[in-house]
Amino acid sequence: MRQLLASLKRRLPAQTTKQGRDGLLFQRLFWGTLAGCLATILLAESPVLDTMELNLLEWRFKVAHEINSNLMPQDKSQDIVIVTYDDEDQFDLEAEPMDGGPEPIQEVLAELVNEIERQHPLLVVMDIDLSGRPDPRLIRVFRRYRSNIVLALLGNLEDPSDFPSAELRKACAACAYDFLIREPNGLVCQLPLVVTDYESASPVYNYGQESFDSLPKAVAALIASKGGVGPSIGQMPRFTTQDVPLYINFSGTKYDTYTTSQVINGEVPDNAFKNKVVVLGTRFTQKKDNTPQVRTPLDDNVTHAQIQADAIRTIHKNLIISTFPRDILHHLLLLAGGSLGAIASVLKMSTRTTSFLCISMVLVVLTQTLFQLAHVHVPIVPVLAVIMLSFIFGTLIYLDTDLRLRNRELAEAREAMQIRAEQERQRIAEDLHDETLPALSSVARMADRLSQDLEGNPVPNEMRQKLDTAVVEMRRVINDLHPSVLETMGFKPALDNLLVILERDMDIETNFNDLDDEDDYQIGDMTKLQLYRIVQESLNNVQKHSGASRVEVAIGVKGNVLTIAVRDNGRGIDPDKIRSDSHGLLNIRQRAQLIGASVTWRVPESFENGTELSLELPVNVAETRKVIK
Image 1 (cartoon, rainbow, N blue to C red):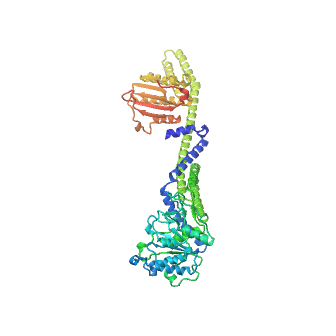
Image 2: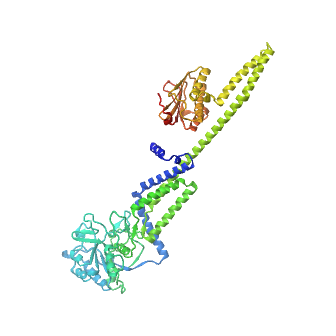
Image 3: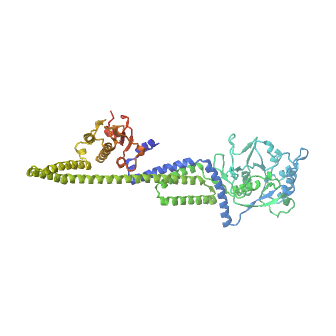
């Protein structure tokens, strides 16, 4: 991964990767955008987020209902009436037919439909189970009012025994399948107006030679054809299983609801059903195990008839809630993720959290407004998840780049201090060479004259010897302060000279191994000086602590790395136990970091024991073109 990023970085323009504020800004924007896009890709199709979105959808319905309830009077439908038909009406809905005849409830339904039709309703929707043998009296009622009877097909389309009889179906203006999708969280929300059958490529339900629309669509189309209000079949949105879902607009609408007993006994107000859609449905109350386990975002247990009434009203009033197209949403999420990641990677820490919280709140309010006013459901959970991950990734990128910037500035400050220190050492060395050293030499000459004038007196000769020692020591100090040998002899001869001095002073066998006969390596004077100081400090450690009898310095280029190795056969050190007060070794590490080199200590392969300092410094191979022999 690191090699891939390094190769990508090399392909970027040089001005964008320079070590400065502009280059840092580009890096933050680049990696922040990349991280934001990655977060979007990871979250765009997450099933966990889909489940969370469904739960949030329930919250949207409730918020919209609360707002509408407080800002406007309670909405009551003027177009749909519900008539319940259940055990509360003292009819045994589970009574068995006698001698294989029709179910007893069909006789009651025939009377019920007659009573409803006397008030001239627009449509009568039979959302009850009429499977089994038909009652002739019910067939006659259906035929009499055929133009405004809609029969709902319950159960499974794959089982023809669940269908009402053919006589009943032919006696109705329309038969429709009462299909509504239930979400994984139990909510009945999705509204398939047209579902495609992939085998027949027909946008309706097919069984044998008969085709059935969904109940909400069939009823809405009949309302439009009879009353001239509402969308026609051609205007209704199409829906397939691959499309985005369409949602029923559960808004807490109230419906006039009457029981079968009230209708049959004449307890219903006049004109209660006139020019209205009457939905007949069951509501089991005595046997809880038969209670339909469905719920809307606003109520826990509702009758199936009420849900169908909400679906019919949704289509009739053009209130269908459409979902924002997923393919477009994914592209917008990718764009938003990249943008948010870039923003998070450049914003200051003090404003980042506030900005992202404000963005999240604005998006939540905006999507709720679109849901409530424009009837568009925009999935917000993936957006919030992308915002959260973009915030996290952007913060990490900001902290990482900020840390690297501060480390770089610290390294530059250390380099500047080192340069000033070297300049000060050079000034002191020049002062000692130009002023102090000539003064000592002048005193030495005065001691010579005194020895001639005071012949036989040993003091002048002793002064001369001490002065000579001081001059030698002064020259050594001057050379340590500013090694002019680097300028006069060159880089490698200067290193070799350190070994010569060590062998002369300590009687240690030394060896300088030049692996490539190159001297320059296209490195600057400051880098050469630091390398010289590192080798010098390492040899000083050998002289003071190792007790070695052999020392070797090897230098050469391997690949694109300049390698310097200082090996000895002394007592050796454990690199893991280097003390914090080991100023010499810490000084070596700091000098190496200053020039971008790395140092390690280990046991040399050429000796049984001892210590090997290995220094590696990246160099420009295209310039040196050298290989270790």
